Length: 88
Image (tube, rainbow, N blue to C red; front, top):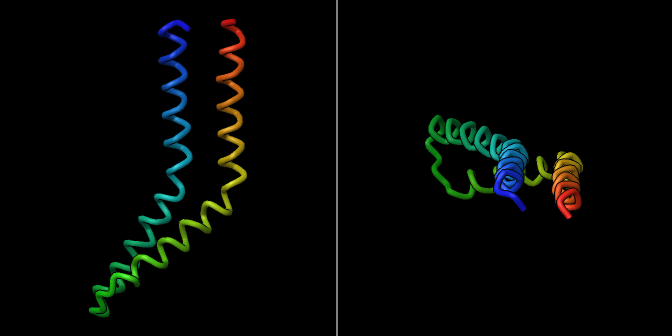
């Protein structure tokens, strides 16, 4: 394995990871901001009020986008295996 192929595989892996984690993180961030504003407006500062909705929304996002995420991971794995087979 040449260094160029290795660097290319690692670079693509980082890109795939960033693409896959962005939707759940954005949903969690937006939910946290909305809940934080509501807590500040109502002066209710309970930790479970921020935790539970963020977890639920993150799981729902992963459930809704799970097939797309799996498809991206399978495509990446195929590319890695094709590059590996091309070297052997």
